Structures are given as C-alpha cells and as structure tokens.
Image (cartoon, rainbow, N blue to C red; front, top):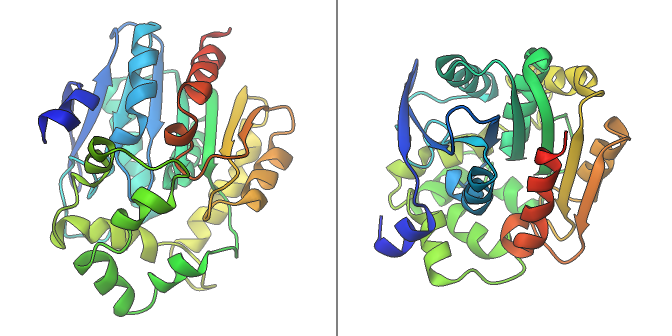
Length: 289
C-alpha cells in the first residue's frame, strides 16, 4: 500500500478467523461507542467507506468495515463463496465481536449480504443505511455486467484483463477519481488470482431460474418485511449504470417511511461523487435518536 493510499486509509486492521479464511476488517472509533457495520460490494473493499468511517469515528461511533473474503485485504480462499456463505461469514464476525445491537450500512452486494443478515437477526439491528444496492430478485442487469457473466470468456475478462475492477474506477463515478483514490480502489486486485472473487461475485448474480443463489436472494427479499419498522435512510446516486431507479423505487416501496437523500448527478459510488454532501447527513441520521 503506497503512502498516498495509506494516508486515505489510516485505519487499524483486525482479523477474524472465518471458516473459509481470515477476514480482515477496520475497527475504528471508541470500542464502547455505538456500533455501525458497513458492508461494501463488488469490486470495492472497505476503502469505499473510508471518509464516512473517519467522520463516524470522530462522532463517537465504533465503526466495523470488513473486507469480504476474497476481497480487499482479506484472504483469497479457493472456494467459490456464494451469497449464503457471505451472509454466514459476516454473521460470524458480528458474533466474534459480540455486537448485540448495531446500525448497518450497505452498498452494492453489501445490500444482499447485510440486509440478508439483518433479516435473520432483526432484533439486533438499529438504523439502516441503504445506498445503491439491491436485496431482492430482479431481472434487470446491464449488458456490460451480463458480458462478464458469459461462460468462460466472462471470467477470463474479469480475472485476466481486470475488466471489472478497473472499469469501475470510471464507470461507477461521474467525477473523475484522482490518482490516489483510483490506486486505492485497485490496490487489492493487481493479479488474476487476486481478482477471482470479483469474478465469483459476478457469477453469483442469480439471473437463471435454477441458479443456486436464487432461493437465498428470494428469502432475503421476503424477510425485508421484518425490517419495515426500522429507521432507514436511502442514499442514492441516480446516475448509476447498474442499480438504476427501478432498484430505488423498490426500496422506496418496501420502506415508505424512509428518509431519502437523492443525488441526481452522482453515480454508483455515490460517496465519491457527493462527498460531504452525502456523508454529513448520514452521520446526523445515525446520531439522531
């Protein structure tokens, strides 16, 4: 990690020995502060949350931001980990840390993982931040992602030519990333082997009726009703090529009393595009009792 990236990501990194490998995670802020669990998606890592983590820590929160197995700083297990495996891994982390009550923030695949976890333990969940993600079945998939799911060639493109993590550094934002930020997003994925889980996440999108993750994602969506009385903030960048307004509308339908913060000129990485205009209201949302 270069000094420039380390300056953007100045966190203690801890380890949790999950069943399928060591999961590494940021643990920032006072250990007796109210806990917030932040879950990234694909092809990002906990670096995605760095600016929010810093501000929440200053506000007195204990912020837990893991890297999913195969991603970020975590181990690269050879096993193909599917959605259910990933929910179970985060469940194990929460128990390992003894988090009896926590707020949760989710993005991209972190939505299916985190809201899947929340639906299995609603009594432990406080507030929920939902940002540019999905947690229910959908037939909506962009062509550029569908190409990466093609048998053989899709994985070859993603792993060998970095045709997912690298394009995300410009497709997922409307404002160009500076050199250090781009380096930070790409840092964990320099080789084909390091990008295996990036391809696995793409392959685990359950588009086919017989896909092994389809029933799991369907259950995640069904159990969102157990979270309907939670305080929810929906933070969304409307210029998202992947999680478009159909996903936003579905979350609005399922959480009609949610607080909404919509950025018409922000993309998939809404925290990058909107910056403090998004981060400060999130901190206030989590601070308000």
